[in-house]
Image (tube, rainbow, N blue to C red; front, side, top):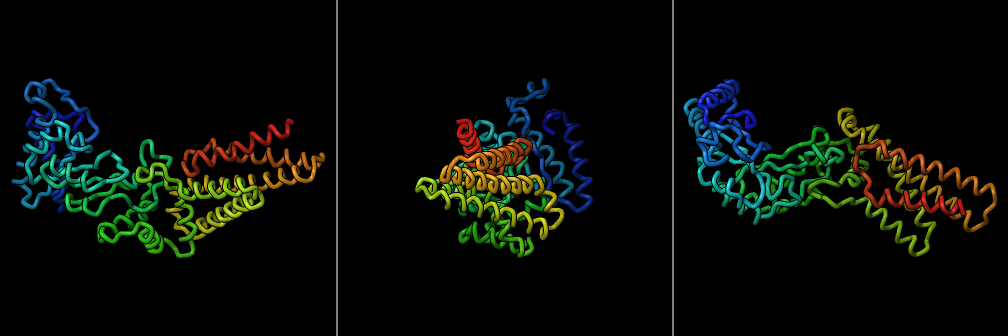
Length: 373
């Protein structure tokens, strides 16, 4: 209610209590008051006159609501999400909230950032000390809203130190809009919370695949997921794409062009087989969620196939002569590669990284210069 709320108006308290009681009548006893993503300064004149700052206003309103609800709900569990909900806890707002807020009220916290790459024990201790209680973590993974909407976060839950749980009263994870696809990373998180000391992300991921997908498609989904690693937990990581490019360039550097071309051909075939298996075996709801990423995956397979074919023709031209028939064949393969490459301007997904794009683009440019000369 933060945008329209007048913290000093007692009628606002009763409005909130009435709303909550409708749900309590359905046997719900856990409620949240969320002040996130609103202005960090008081907006209403009556509040500015009564309170020194936003933290004091929110503590006042929260206590009034909490006091009224406790009279009606003996087993109440009450959560507040503050307006500043991440960082090192040194902000004046966080310090005031932690010091003044009733210690029985849970406080949401996302970690050192809104979507943190990692949460360490040190981060957790700072938050616990600032809030004067163990935070209830709202961990923003595998969520992919906002600027992350091009990404598919289906890789395992990682980079949360086991000792963080000693300084937390609980964790909730924020899923993607793709609810079926979210089940895979959420399952891995469940394995982490069940046994954080012995958690192995790779083993957890395999287990999640085999427990949630038909076994015939698990290997295909695993490879597909390795082209969808980019996320707040892995901001620079494109596992499969990096590995492919490294192997390809290493072979070229050693002047093993046939080997380099075979690397592209093999991966193009892998991708084609993956798409076939996923379309055949995956649940329809999950397949619908994955469609735009799977479409790009399939087209990249075609693009890699065209790239390999073009390079093979180019190699033949360079090694056996520049006759007209072969040049025409090279031009035809270049046009086909260029069309395949340009198709990706339509995609709004993030599977292949800039190096992969650069590899194809560089080949097109160099081939065009070669043909003009």
